[in-house]
Image (cartoon, rainbow, N blue to C red; front, side):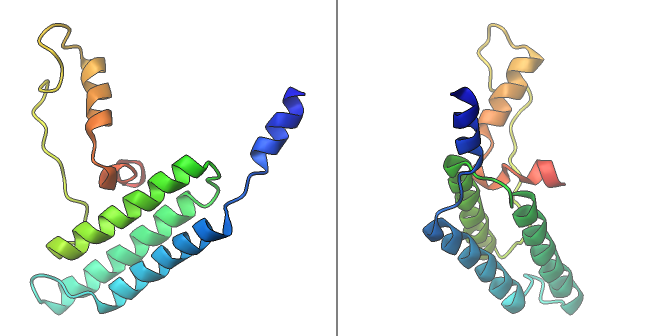
Length: 135
C-alpha cells in the first residue's frame, strides 16, 4: 500500500493553469530583458544587465523544472513575481540584499550560531530564497 502511494505521489503533474502561469512569467521576463534600460543609461551596462536577466531566468527555471509539489511551485511563482516587481520598481535587475546585524535575531538567552542561522533563513525575503543556491 505504501509503495502505491509513493508512486502516486511521484506522478503528480503541474496543472494546466499553473503551467500557463509559469510559462507566462518566463515570457514576461524575456520581454522585460528585451526592453531593459540600465539606470546609468550606458550601453555596456544595459547589455550586461540584459544578459544577467536572461541567464538568471534560464538558470532558475531549469533548476526548478522538475518541481512537482504545488506548494513549492507556488513559492517559486511568488519569488519570481516579487523579483520582477522589485527589479522594475528600483530599475535594478540584481536581487536587493538584506542587512541583518550579526547575532541580532535571537533572544538574549541562547544566542548560538546554529540558532542565528536558522533565524536568518526564516527571515530571508521571498525574492532571495533561490539566489544563494544559484550564486
